[in-house]
Length: 358
Image (tube, rainbow, N blue to C red; front, side):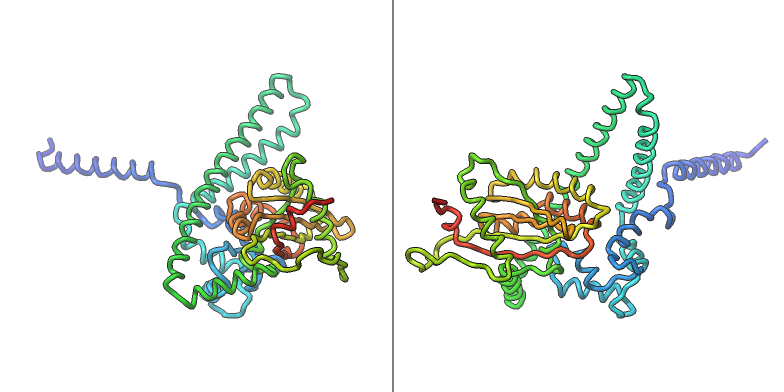
């Protein structure tokens, strides 16, 4: 027969083992390196040369978010690239970012599993749909539609979260720049540069702008063709302009509209994917009040798209570049381009847009 002390010891040991079993039952599964395959693929997308290494230009073109400037991105690149060779291994980049994943490590694993699960379901649907009964086909269509709606809902939540933290970061940086004359001057110089030409590595140049004609009942529709002809003339080697009529002086208080032109060399085997993304982006952009006109033109001989946007002013254009739909579109089509996109902007007096075509 056990003594009282022995019975107490047995109870304590039993409770200890029970708690350990519960911790093992509810602890999250450990993640191995193969669980981060989707994370590794992200950095391979940035490697346009497919040589396993990233130059600073490739790094900047992929990671520019409109918040960090070129100098700050260069500093980050140098901090990650311990070899200081201006060609960083994508594996090194993946390892460095992996240290800061936090809760998003589980998110990436879930995305990887979700991707495999959805593709598997779609493959089975493709094989079995035609031979299915009417009710089975109906349910399949319903489930596909609802799956898509759920994914869109998640994407909208992510867009809102991303837009909020980027706006918050932008305000904080603006407040800091107000107290730092040197940084303020650099910001002004960047704005002056963007008003003439945006380079492919500029933070704003990573955002694709596209277009649709506006409705005929808008007050701007009468001038759409005239501005398109003007833009076509500007693309020529020796553009011919009609002489100015009336007083050539310009009112310094007159507002200016902004015309943006982007050239996008789309890879031939990504045409369908690009067109779907383009159509979705057009629908979201065309309803913005500050966008006066949007149009797109494809150069079939070069497999490239030329996209135009006309905005009420430069500020509305920049706000659009920071919007969730613009950034989402850029992230979607980044794999579709053979070479970095090129963007040019020009400003015209707003009265030119309001001129009577007759």
